Length: 191
Image (cartoon, helix red, strand yellow):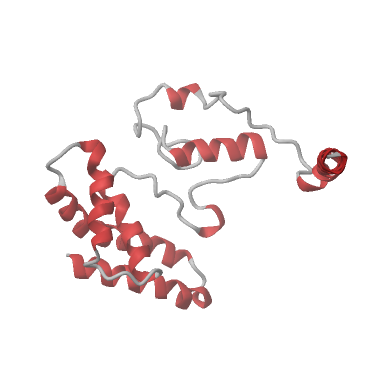
């Protein structure tokens, strides 16, 4: 009986020492893990009022994004808080995927990933289940609209990627062309 209590106390003591050591090591390493303080305040909406109060997509912000889109807010944070001069052509790439388009277009990329990276057959039942789950918030009766949107999305996405391709150095284009060709094939097949 005494042996059981002694081993319980030893285990309890070992856990406490382990917890204290873990906290101590993390505290000692925290400056190395995150050397600069984070300045963005969580839950604070300091997005410029001129952009915030205007109707969505009615203005182009100083970073060349439409106002009240996620890319505009990220550009604001990077410029204002991090001191990074981020804009819509930062490092030669067009970042403006926050565009006015049909919400059903967004699943095209997910489907493309499942086909190209996971090698799922386009007729696999997963696609229907994923579509149904995606459409559920919109209510019944949108399957036909969704299928039409997927046919258009591939071509729209391919056109959007042309700007990115043109911004690349010629030596970087062969690698880009592989993904672009796959997307274009899917877009043309769906159309």
